[in-house]
Amino acid sequence: MLKKHTFWIKAAIALQFLTAAFHSLSFLGKPVAGNETERQLIDLMTTYQMDMGNGFTATMHDLYTSMSACFPLLLLFGGVLNWFMLRQKAELHIWKGLIHIELVIFGVCFLVMAFLTFLPPIVCTALIFSSLMMARVTFPLKKHIVTG
Image (cartoon, rainbow, N blue to C red; front, top):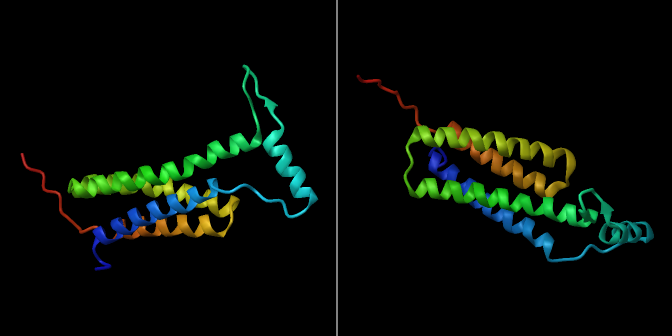
């Protein structure tokens, strides 16, 4: 079972969906200050509007939220794409190309998380990257015959 690439693709899909759901929980609560410095920081991030030119003003909280919303969207896109390709019974050469692309994207995502975030997103992206790597390693060796 662990030697089949479809197992690892399904594991990647499940991890992508679970991580997207897990990360989306962060949108439900408000940040709570633990001390006066944190209260000032949260107050500035949520109320101070910076003039960014061309009539665009936003708070750091707005920018943070917009960037933070992109992470679960990336995960959902990867999971839905993998699920769709699995249902369509895509050929092996298409899977190899797709997995290579996802390895680059989720590998960079993992590195960013490893250096700039905290433990839960690091673990989640590491598991996604690892399952994609295992899917690639367990692809069957297939000889391409050129006819012609």
